[in-house]
Length: 181
Image (cartoon, rainbow, N blue to C red; front, side, top):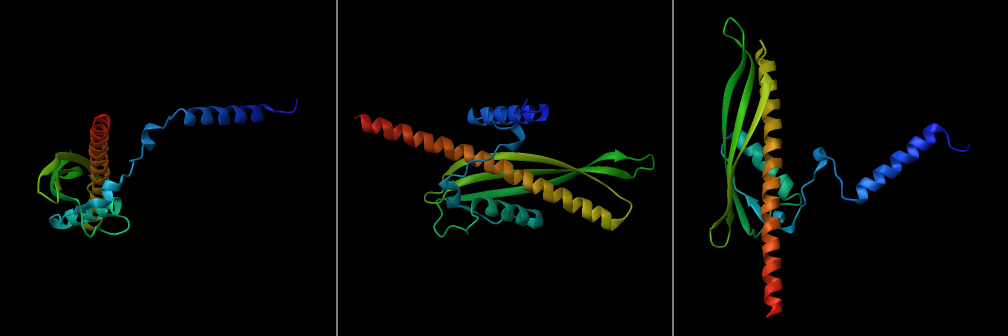
């Protein structure tokens, strides 16, 4: 026989993969946001505190990878609030694990008339270990902040992608209705 058992298994795996990809199947963890032209027209306004600056940078890199728009159609106003709570506490009262709750409130504003087009609140919970050494605590907290900021930026990108897709779909419906007249 010219195909071994391994050859048949590989051929079957390739056929199944091609079959699934041709029907539009994508693993849940690998969903990608469809970038629309509208993202390049969003100017992210400054956000207060250090974490806000990091979040603004993450959003700007996602929305405007080639530079901020000179004449934006939209302004994104955001406010980031942080809270910490203890999760693991020793008998002596020392915290061993903490959770940082990052809450992002945002408004997408029409730059021409100042109307709020979309608004919402996103929440991200990131946990980290609290060590007995200050340097390790600082490192763990910084790492948790970075994870939380990236997660918030991704959530907001998905929300705005849905908004822009709905907005584009609404324009297409109106255009089609006008073309029938």
